[in-house]
Amino acid sequence: MDLGIRGRRALVCASSKGLGRACAVALAAEGVHVTITARGGEALAATAAHIRSVYPDVDVAEVVGDITTPQGREAALKAAGDIDILVNNAGGPPPGDFRDWTRDDWIKALDANMLTPIELIKASVDGMMARKFGRIVNITSAAVKAPIDVLGLSNGARAGLTGFVAGIARKTVRENVTINGLLPGPFNTDRIRGNTRKPGMSEADLDEAIKARGLENPAGRIGEPQEFGQFCAFLCGANAGFITGQNILLDGGAYRGTL
Ligand code: NAP
Image (cartoon, rainbow, N blue to C red; front, side, top):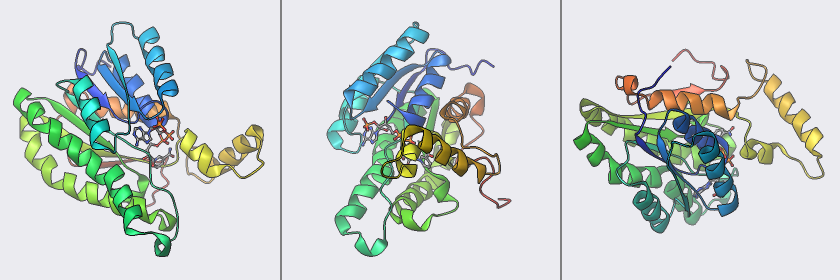
């Protein structure tokens, strides 16, 4: 399927690894020029090199920086130019007990998972509306639909972003600018490997533990990042202009509700 976005420009935040990387690769496969970001330069350079080698017609800009800071966002936006597609992503907050969280912990979570996407939307949405094309995808979490008790920081920050987007997504769509949330369940990324790893575990034991975790899912497995990336690219497609303000779960059916 040709998604009709060849030659468009995307900023994909937090994209040297995992779900962000998969979104950048899937967009590049559609001929979209991508700006990718991460704090660590090495993995980012490797991802940029991969995209350049597989999709030589695509321009790839890499920006090393923390997207949750004003400087990180400014550098990313400057490198990306007039973007048609924005994929908001950043690391998730740590788990814990809410009794231990300070105001600073909350501000950090809100900065990363609520205010950073809002700032990037603010910086890019008017240009998209003026040009009559824009696709904004916020990578959030299945916890938006089914909050997880130990992930209170994530539940709170992502709910805030989701509420904000629900309002403006109905304002922008008239100009062919859509804003949607993609809600990952368990996906095979460094993050899930880090969360599953116990002290002293070998890589083989870790693979087994992740496999066991997958068996708890209705699909009998966890998701692969490219499945997420492909769906993100579809939502960014020319023919996805009638989908806005939605929060779409990609979780193998783990969420048991009908709505
Ligand atoms: P991941 O595999 O750990 O990859 C995270 C990527 O984001 C890396 O490229 C990392 O590079 C970059 N990054 C993190 N913080 C950043 C920052 N402040 N500024 C710039 N880049 C940053 O994580 P993932 O599994 O893809 O998760 C992506 C998002 O989905 C997270 O918010 C996570 O909570 C959420 N999520 C994931 C799952 C899952 O099963 N994988 C499930 C639910 C929700 P650097 O470290 O070098 O910056």
